[in-house]
Length: 111
Length: 114
Image: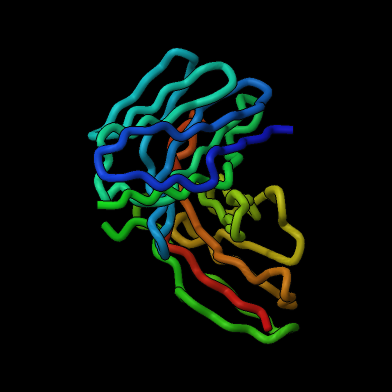
């Protein structure tokens, strides 16, 4: 069965303190791995799609990387406005109608 | 463009009552989805649709029904509300086709069953 595990559950950083969020996955053939940001009371907002091991994508202070078993979301010099829950999801090759989501990492950046 | 719009934003139901959660999108997306999000859990797929008149079950369909009569609208029906259906419900849409298009989400309906 496809599974997605995110760690840590919660992360508190000081402004400017870089760190990484982990997404470990098990899927029978990866079609795509997705990162979303979710603010309190809002729906998930799309950040990145990664398709194959070795791929990297960047957006402002965020960089997502992918291996055959996990993805990392690196946050460089975070600011308080980066505080949110970050969700990871995978889509399998055999099923393009379903995404399996992890439980998310709740990031708090203190000024 | 409004994107994906969900109504209502909040609702309290009594056990056994019925209601319909509304979802509409203005992006002309073929694919639409309903998820539920419970504390500490990932989003779980309830139902999805690949086009008007076509719907299928997701991971957790029991207790829910859907219909898709137009491209824009994808309502979710709860027939006999139970406390286990207390959750936050998200509707999403995507262009579909290749299957690796990101989904665009609404801001959710927070539902409590008492």
